[in-house]
Image (cartoon, rainbow, N blue to C red; front, side):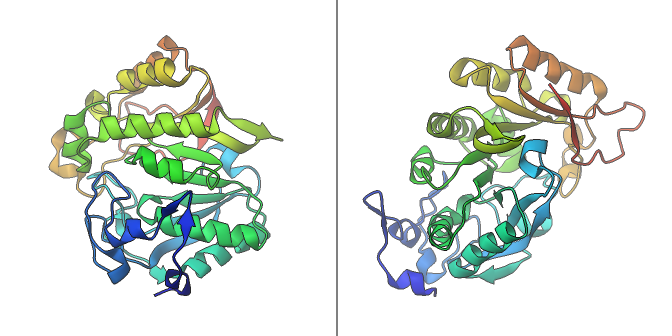
Length: 315
């Protein structure tokens, strides 16, 4: 038990620890008492389990910059993506449990190493602890932006709690179909929860603001293209353009690779084709989404080669 849990902390008139005593901080609303280390769907308890933290150079250029993004990879996840490339820690739970004070000090350590930002990867199930850690770190001198790098399976009311904590939202919009969200990621209600929370993120931080080529505030929406149109790219682009703004920065990702349990589903047991990727780009252009990044287009002759995470074409 952390010393901070001995206090009743209030944030915006809400006793945030109560949200862990009957956990309802993501759409699953499991209701377990995480203060007593009960485990719900995500398998996260009271302590913050971290797989790795380092200066990361594989994000979008304005996140990684020249010095790297101070990235913290959290263990566990509130989804079960059958194709997850991070399954060793997101699904299998590898990592080390640490305190809120450790997390705060880790942020300061990454800042001292020159990180452009603190990049919280898969943070949803630790959002309460993150709020506390950021407050502690800021009191100790943390000044760089906080990036909330999420799968997008969020509650809009939790995004409200992150107002003033998070500077840059980096959400996925994975699916335009509830059927696909359940079948491939076990995320019931994903489309409605995802759209409501992304709208709240956009209302909170607005379009991207940069200084000297480095993001300081705003939203970047990531979209991973799945084979056979199963991510519903066109519908997602339409939503972003009409409900947010065609000026929103997009990160269109071609890196899908069938790992973990993807082989159970023949329709996604391959990389995307060049034609599938070109169709996704056409959808972006159709809805006027011209800001952001795309990855290398896959080659139909070499679909079994992993494409990596290098974003190299500004659109």
